[in-house]
Image (cartoon, rainbow, N blue to C red):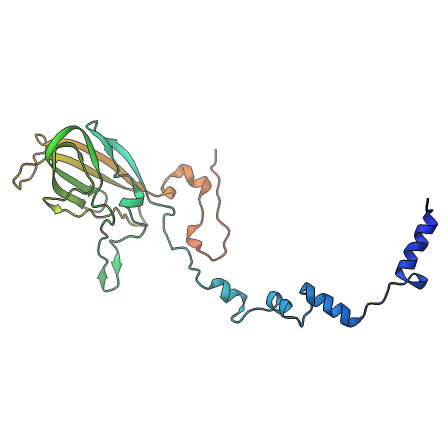
Length: 252
């Protein structure tokens, strides 16, 4: 068995005479650093350590846009507050299809911006608990101002069925093409009301009591409108400025 003294002597012998480290040729050292990408004069070192043309920051910012400036942050949500029992199904609360994130009623370049129209689906689908023939659908934003803002007003032929298909064409109406629900970003939640009435085969205004079939009330709001979510609020107006999200806590 080799003693500790023998091991120490063997270690010194490896390092060289007198216990000194072996000398490494400068050319070999440069070649080794070059292979590892650590030689400042090597192409590998320059690619990983020297800034590219335009600088690191400009290259990182290329193609990156900041977050949109919003008032009440978060995705616009549609919440159903009331629905008549005669309505079995309605996809009006599908915010991915029937809302927009930007306000379309504010001023734009060259004048007021046009109201956006629905893309992909002509209008929401409605399923009743009984068959109907001619129906009149009316949707309006009751919080748009002094007078309600009509988003959808059209007459349809359901053909004696319970379903008004989303692809059914309007026969006539004040606004046969559905306008997307786009409440202003700065302001309180909006509530909307949709009524479904019986329609004759002639153009006339439906009677409120005799022709009434069903109604639906929904609220359009963003997460910041809910005081219970204040504990998880974020500073969405900061964009990509590098600010830390603002977090507050509810006081008990």
